[in-house]
Image (cartoon, rainbow, N blue to C red; front, side, top):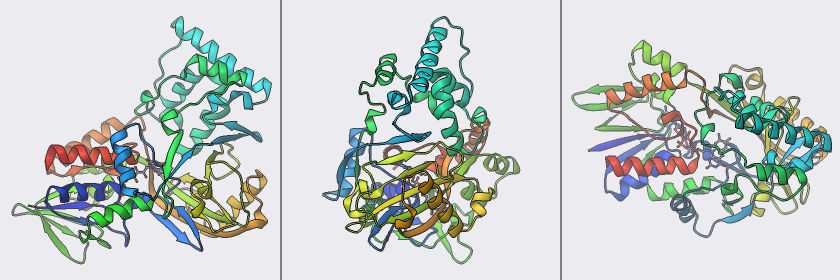
Length: 434
Ligand SMILES: Cc1cc2nc3c(=O)[nH]c(=O)nc-3n(C[C@H](O)[C@H](O)[C@H](O)COP(=O)(O)OP(=O)(O)OC[C@H]3O[C@@H](n4cnc5c(N)ncnc54)[C@H](O)[C@@H]3O)c2cc1C
């Protein structure tokens, strides 16, 4: 039996590695000329940038974390997060609710007051359970934290009305403990998202080092520059075409975005419409090199202000000292948008110039020190769980099941999956099916 794996991102390559260890016959078809999808890295002029956005290696699942680390061997560094949110010029410790004492007193008080008021109302059952993301922020954190940070930041990253985003993934986030909020407001040290407080990063080669290691393990099984464009079923075989040549397989496992897969199939109108209504946003990254020995000691910084394009900047030269040439440092700015937006239509130079001006204005960089600049774009960045999500994904997945095509990975399953979840799902899939 010959298996086709569509896509050579993390999920496709992990599946290949697992199938190979079971001595199964497979081929991975990848549309780009290199593997890695969102986890590709640019190495130029001594700088190393993860151009699918800032990636760090962490997991609550020790086994999966060990698997990722084993792929890196000695090529890894363990870092402690030092992340802030820039709010009206103040650097507030991340997560925001753990950094309230960094705010001016009046604003700190507002956050604490509304958080406590909310708790009292919840105890008295005076608060309606939330039905969408916006309501959830008010319900969980109170008006102060919600309006000062969570709502503006999330509006900026999702580029979608928060009242139309469901509770699909937030329900997994625990409520912040009262004790932490009180301590944070008084300036006593607390930490949130502790599973991510320490993280790993490749010493050399950026996050794509993980991909390179996997590629070595599935050597010779990846066909690059093969964009799956047409899929037909004939005489019990799958015929896969990139409109230039055809390949024959017995089985398909797809890790490519569900929209691309549907477009390659003869799907009924209802299924096509459901897939078209599955929402996602896109990402532009601006990579900047600076002629500055040490810019700061931050890992990354959130920028909720609406008057700056980027919502998050990270500092790759603080992840690994080898990510920038000696005596230089680097910044990676992320901008989410929809591909119909004005931002996506701007040319690369315009975007880079605007980001440099804005970071200069926010005093994050000195624009006269910029010595490297490049822009990249990724169409698929974040899945948006809008209120129609459940209905649409069910229609699409039921169709795929009827067709006998299996889906694994972030945009194939169309779920908010980090690297560890992609690996976990590939392992689960192989254990159950191969
Ligand atoms: C901004 C950002 C930051 C992130 N940071 C982190 C982090 O810090 N830590 C973490 O654990 N995770 C992080 N992630 C998540 C992580 O990037 C993903 O979980 C992972 O890369 C998904 O891998 P994948 O193989 O499922 O999908 P992809 O990487 O999207 O791979 C899909 C592949 O399919 C190919 N393809 C598409 N269409 C076709 C076609 N028609 N024919 C053939 N091939 C096709 C693509 O070229 C691509 O190579 C982040 C994601 C984003 C967007």
